Length: 369
Image 1 (spheres, rainbow, N blue to C red):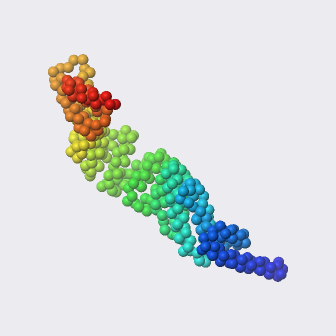
Image 2: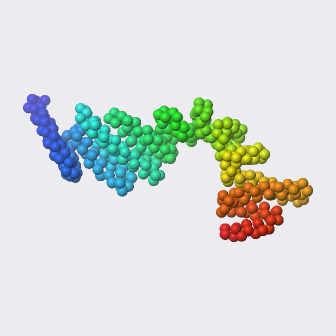
Image 3: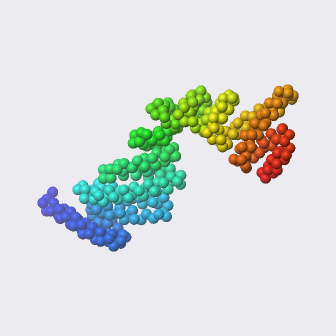
């Protein structure tokens, strides 16, 4: 290449730099005066001459970001944010001397917050895949060398969006990362275990739960999850094993109710009743427990009512069952006065017991249904 041609190229490059620098000053003045449209037109022109200019890309990103309006649809916000983010990334790439580092860090944090709000809007609108994409942008920003501040909330959001979108490998990854950050976040451990289960990895599901159950035997949530799983697969013995274990550390009325229900389903009625009685000691107003106790006595009574002939002993038992059922049903009625099923059961009991006044009152109440 001739010396004359080299000189020409050098002059051309130098003139471009001078032009861009002059434009930057004017752009900054226009931005200060909030004349964004004119500033953007100058930036577009200047970038044609100097596409590697970090300031031009930075200012372009700022202008684009200002276009976002709260009332804009989420997908429009996302498009605007994506364009601004693209400009900031180019500004970071060409800012080799790190002149814009602090300004870029501030702008990236700002855009990350806007991404987070937009992601939640998309999530609430059930646009889970789009929401995941947005939350992943937040994570990308937080991992950048300029920001370098891990946004763990974005990991939570991404995990939930991936789970709802049924993109289970990503959900697994994000929940796994959360568990690394916060090894005592029990809910995230359970969520990760359930992602394993949803992917058909039941061995990993059980391994994770049992490991944490052994490591933290005082934590209820792992027992409950294991009880639920074993009931789901109809392994009653294992379910009862974990139920009894958790009841040693937590005398919880809900857990006692569950134990009673399992025993009742196994037709171990007397053991079920003992569990229900313990439950009522803790919470005398537990309507579910009262109903199950009422149902036990009611069903025993119906079995006798349906018999063709009763012995004197059976007649006595029938009255006992009916009176006991009424006792529980009346309590439930005070808690749930509009429960039609309870009123029907009471009506039957009163009829069988020959309590005509009470039967008439219940019949009148049933007329409003």
